[in-house]
Each structure stands twice: as C-alpha cells, then as structure tokens.
Image 1 (cartoon, rainbow, N blue to C red):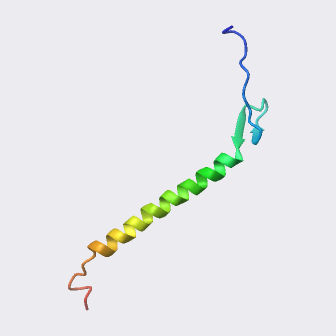
Image 2 (image 1 turned 90 degrees about the vertical axis):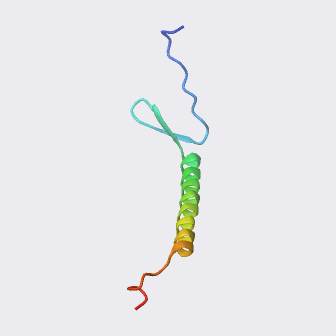
Image 3 (image 1 turned 90 degrees about the horizontal axis):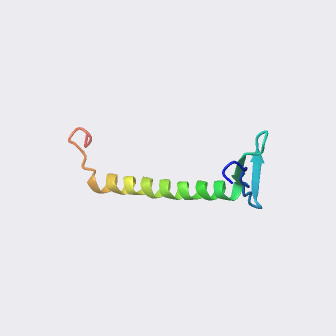
Amino acid sequence: MPTDDCEVYIGANETCFGNSLDMCLSWTNIVLAIFIANAIQMIFEASLLFALEVTYTPTPLEKL
C-alpha cells in the first residue's frame, strides 16, 4: 500500500547514524572510493607531468 512505510535495507557492514538510523554508511565503499579517487588523481597528475616534459621548451630568458 502506498501509505505503508517501506523497509529500509541495511547491509551487514553498514553503520547507521541519526535519531531514526536513517543515514547509513558502508565503510568498505568509503575506502574503495578513496582508493579509486587516488588512482585517478595519480593518472591525471602523471599525464600532466608527461605533457609538461614533452611540450616544455625553454625561452631565451630561462636558458641564462
């Protein structure tokens, strides 16, 4: 029925917060997201470093 409250699925490795335990976090997902973000950032910074080394040409003032 549309007026009935629905069940909220909470996984085994989730921690819930709040007065009604309505905000749940999975620490596994948080750690996985951090590792994925760090890997993407490392690839991006390596590509910037590679682009700088390939396209860098010193100006006459920098050769002094």
